[in-house]
Image (cartoon, helix red, strand yellow):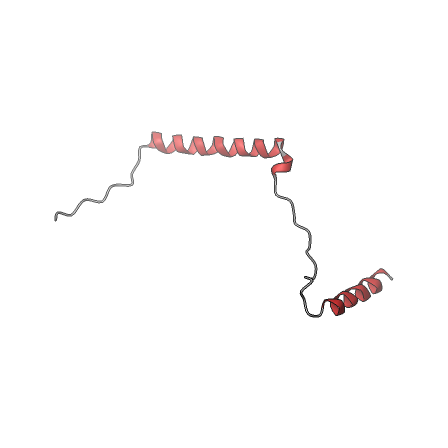
Length: 73
């Protein structure tokens, strides 16, 4: 079986710059959409705290409360 030549990865500069321009326009469009639709952006998730199934949840909650009370003073 004859071996096939590996295809070259060279491309014309016209194609290279066309791709570069398309990428630039796409990113510009995405920035515009994000700016016009702020609800579509990701929001930070809240701290879930201590899970209910944690074996020493009550003890941890009491310690956290004591620490919070001493910081407030």
